Image (cartoon, rainbow, N blue to C red; front, top):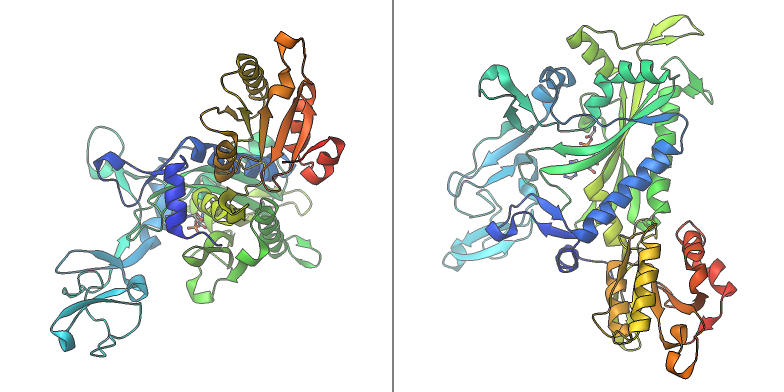
Length: 494
Ligand code: GAP
């Protein structure tokens, strides 16, 4: 079964992934807080992204820039003039809508053919009783909508103690601009040769007119962006370098999402039409995911040409060029930009991992997270919480493994229940300590010093010496599959 958004919202709250921000005050419609498991999942997504796209590559470096930037950055980038959405307001209930989304909403209708009875009608459809189409506010069904007005999505604030025009600045609406304004700093300090990329993961802010759909569209979110600079005069495989690298990045990003668990049938590419391209883009391709709300953008990969470096050079008066030693000329690099949202990636990984299964006549909910993404890697469970020796061994194992991974100890329910709890949050492995492990000191039995490891997806169990646990998890959490490792140990029949 595919998870609905309601199911994911409810699981997220119940199991500590995501909470409504400021919930005790009634919450905000557009901000969400990551709970104890959510923050682990989110950190894991950012960590593997950084490891795969920065650490592992000789042509990549990273930065971590401030959110508040010089206000001219936003003039130069075009955000002050172009980063707008058309909005309309209801004159009656004051509800605000994106003009281009208004026809995609279900609409409220007070039907004259049924004595003004109120109906909610699906988007774009006429009323089944009177045949009217929507002309009024879709929310209240009474007010007229204003003509569209352009609304800038940047959050405005003031730098310093005085709220005057000269002090106006903005919360960054994308992380990208810091890579452009630091282009020369990075180039000179790291002595880089084209092509090379600069990556950054961090918060961005957009005063979205209609945020919603859980963490899909929020006003504060995180991005993982790369600006990959190429020499526009170079050719690779007979093609202009920017076009070659654009396609390479599309392929690499798609493969990355597949590698960490998104199923092929839930992923697709979408080419932007010429009339929807951003003002800076020569070509943009989105990776779309089949979210519970339907196919929607997961990330975008744009060819921004030399637009940004030229703009910042013009507005700052500083040269932002690269000296091409071979051709003995200064060039303004082109840039390919793979831009992903952390929150959207998390939502996609969660939706894709969600399964409802039937096990021995009972429903089991399981999040089949890739082990590298799973918020908890191992749960250590004592079979009998009243046996001090069992608890002591289990606690020692937890402390030992926790030096390398996020590992929890839980003795608050019977074993079957504990397994289900860990399945529901996607913990790939459970370790159970039982009587066989510790033996019975009073009878002079030493125990076999082995514990049971249970794998989440197959629910298979094997018996492993305590002394080998760390090595076994280094393999399992380092890429060795259960199918390859399990045959080395005796199975446990449940
Ligand atoms: N620098 C280019 C750029 O920012 P974008 O398509 O506007 O491009 C990139 O944003 C990614 O950031 C999106 O694909 C999406 O994953 C994420 N994103 C954008 N706006 C968002 C929002 N309001 N809430 C959550 N994620 C958002």
